[in-house]
Image (cartoon, rainbow, N blue to C red; front, side):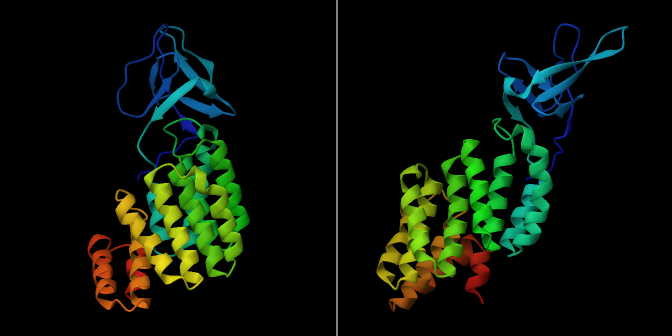
Length: 270
């Protein structure tokens, strides 16, 4: 994903019509107008647009952000950089990289096409991995208010539950799962839910239950590639604990082949 600054964007208007689009970076308004990002700035809840008037210089008009239907522009590179830091086990570095992007995207967080939500997921995961569950939870609450997809919310939930399980707070982890289970409505959210249940079962010594939970991901959420490595690693651990070394090795081989750069593969090779 690629970077694009949000605080200074631009529109060019003619006297009575919007200029034709020159590239893919575009604002789309609810009245059907399409405007390239070429001469405007965001101020509070408004977009201040420069109007070029032939023979009379220019003027500025105000368009409420609420009149945007959606936005189309390349993904900020900072998201990819921060995500790579998460994969490399550097949540503090990831947090430092994603914060400026979130500040830039903040005014447009509820506009379809904004990259605020994707950045917020990274922030929530980074905070959870740093042991700041309350702060991560606050980010997820804001994401819910911004109508984030269930899959993105559950990625953050998974990070919090993983931290809770790793610190022995399984009762709290179970409570979170119970509170969110009914909102798992896509493959990513169902995959995250299965992994969370697997982690808790594994921590509680219920290895067969853990295995069944992990295996639900490749069976019922095959397109959830972002969460597949965690499911494969968990399944391999469960197979090993059950004494099925052949399937444990086969599962690790799948992890290595399909997701060689994943942090789960790095962990498996330690």
